[in-house]
Length: 478
Image (cartoon, rainbow, N blue to C red; front, side, top):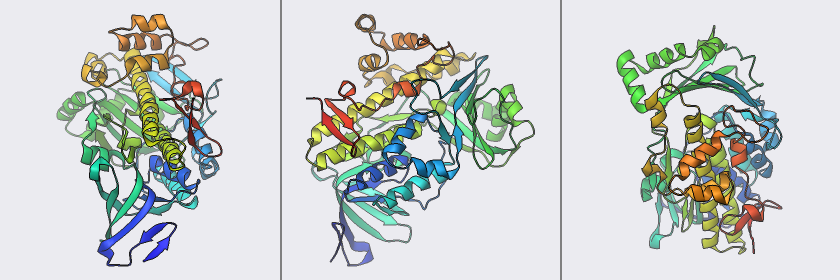
């Protein structure tokens, strides 16, 4: 036997390797690398298994300013700043006949800018950062199965691309395996696809596009279509523009039947979007189209005995407000703090799980309501597309709408009025701009307003709040 960093390594046959670590992380995307970095920085034994060899392609290129404080906590902001990604200083919307710009230097925002990133490069930077902070990062190693004797996650079976296999015992697992969802979706079957946002996204890359003169520097462009759906346009530092079409599944299938191909649907939609056509005038499409569908889902529980689901392994919303990477890194931070607090004996495991479930669900539900409100407040002309973006009664089951109400708007009399029609009243409140904001978009009810880190007792979740210094952990309000 050989011992390294508290991990027991077997010297038997390659197909009979058994090891142990304190924390196993399945997946090397932003959720996994955030958790791995923050735990390794505190001296915990962390193994991260990633099935691909980085860099690897991924969508989700436009980041929110609310990510920068998390990069600061990870000591990774300089790494990202130095890489040369385009600085995103705002967003430009051409939606339902209105045009407006949103600038991140408005008072009260967490940062004056964010980034438009090539995800293969951004994710590799974070993976290498986790490795440099002390995490044992192993690429081309796939987690195949999680053993849960007695109902607790305890052991992972893994395999490599060159045919090696083994098992890893752990105290805690962070399942950050993305849409594949090795534990929650695949084994436990706790993933539930939403009726809302059952959309299709088709996107490609263009070279030679012209920036919109009205847009803030480096901004994302969001353009609604007159009938079905909308486009994103994201400038990247390699000189390309990521251009994606989002529409409901029924309308997409009807258009494909009519026009004969996905490419024809995409280009026909572009022809109906004059603002984006102006940006692409003279540009060349330099890639084949990629496509994803039915991507909006959640999990019945975000954690359980011995495990935490993080990032896309737990939930995903919709690309409209660019929330995917934020939820990934936010959950990576919360899971690292919860695990660290338990391993140090500062909080018991059940309390840490309640904190994680409550804090993560609060963030997810706020964004779910916010995206739904944007579609509903600024609806296009097509009745079916509007209806397809509405939360169904099935979607609303399991949501703590009254708690979300209190997180979004305050007032006991409003909450009393909300009985039986909470979601409608929430949308009505979000339709009214905050003081000092113009009646465009969500009128100041933006993502940064909805996503404060729970770092003070008055923001506590399940009686605990997040302490960030000297390292992320949990503190009791009592």
